[in-house]
Length: 444
Image 1 (tube, helix red, strand yellow):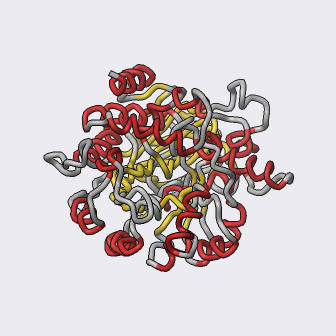
Image 2 (cartoon, one colour):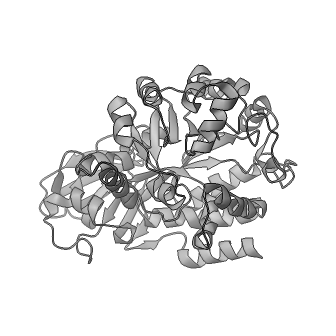
């Protein structure tokens, strides 16, 4: 089926162009015509600024249930983690499906067309597998389909509570026991039109060093993306030094985990040698600024990592907010605070991190761009809201990154089909109610 879209303004990677026509067939972009001052007959009209679909490269869907409640009191990442575990305890395949469907619908409303779900809640409480050992992962894949977005399920190996320590009682449902058992279970998962299956090492504290290569080899044999939480906390760095005499980055490198299909998430507390290792291996970096500031993690060396050769992507992680434009803005503004200088990335570079480079990190090649042959995934933001009105349209990229929010998204199209039209989700009519009901079910 062929559809024609007329975009009032569109960011085509180098500049904002007025009057752009996209011909879409079989879920992909065909012809792209610029300088079309008026819509051709029968075209769907998207007023505002159209961007490639955004990619949320790091998500823990169930963390959405913590929004607001996790702000009560003070503490650290480690005290927040106890609250998070309490939510994880109450998940079932049914409640997780309902929550994830609502969360992914919220993402679609925010212009996100693909999500990387870093998934480690595999089994029932106590560690007993469900009748379908992948029931929880399948619930997430189904939830994404119903919400209308693409998903890369990053099935996560999580085997220990710390260096040489078995899982705690609360972590038993995360663990397959060994990396070989993890590989056997997740090998049953299959790609589908809207879903890719990838792998993840939860962290160097959660996968024994001798089993890291098993996870890396599984991903390599399948050409699948491989993600890993890396140096988010100094306590983990110190424990790794004590256990192995090296940094987490060096440990991952020595066991074959780093490489161009790998993305380190956070990459916050790194040495100069770590940065060089990540960059020289082509390992990506997924920054999650709203979570990193919410959890008081610190500001990672994103500019230095990119300069060393590490491609940057963005994620909303704990979903303190779901807004990839805010993640892009925060990465630049964090660096300004750290260095007291401005202009570390152009708006175009930040948009690429939120779109094309995020899709690449998730294994969706040919996505996150508006060009012939690409997946027909795109989103339109208003240029006449109280946040975006005023600047000339030619500065639309700057307006999007430094002024707009997820509330300015008007349309989201995935595979050439409207998922969000005029700010309303096509398949989940009342997303706030769906979120509230899903969170309430976890409190019951």
